[in-house]
Length: 249
Image (cartoon, one colour):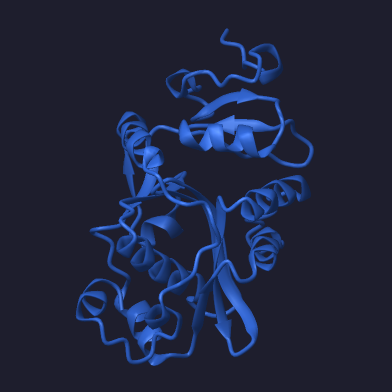
């Protein structure tokens, strides 16, 4: 019977993602800690942590992998109309701690509770180092939705989203996709398939293809700093960029 490797026994080195379990799909190893170096090493190898409070740190690399292809992404008609109406304002990295807390808050379907206090602290450290980023959705001065994830080079690894207003998280994703498109990103990692992600336009690709693509995108040099949203995206009403209107707004 196949044994689950522990990072304490491997010197902190991750096994190849191809050695992940088929069932549960993608479980690769356990143990270690959530310091910045090990998290960045994991993401660059297509591995992410996912565990509950009563579990050890578990590391995953599922096959297939759910992703959003930035170039072909198109927000739904209802989300495009919502953004054009101008009821929301958007920002990047303006309230990271509030966004991750919103994602971690209990929901009616129990989703989001896996973001433990330990994980929140770990991603806040990554944010302060310029690797973890958030998208905020505002109604006046109230945060009503957002998402966060990790960026290495020109690769964005999505982690979670939340919404306190109808379609706020969908609008956050549409704005993020457009900004990443302008910056030359090609792919957003969405980790594991679920109906909500599919409704947003995410698709599944083979893990081997995913790993090959992120090896290239993670190696591209980008300055690690806080992100700033383009002004025409921050205030979406009256966007005058024809290409932007065509692809997302």
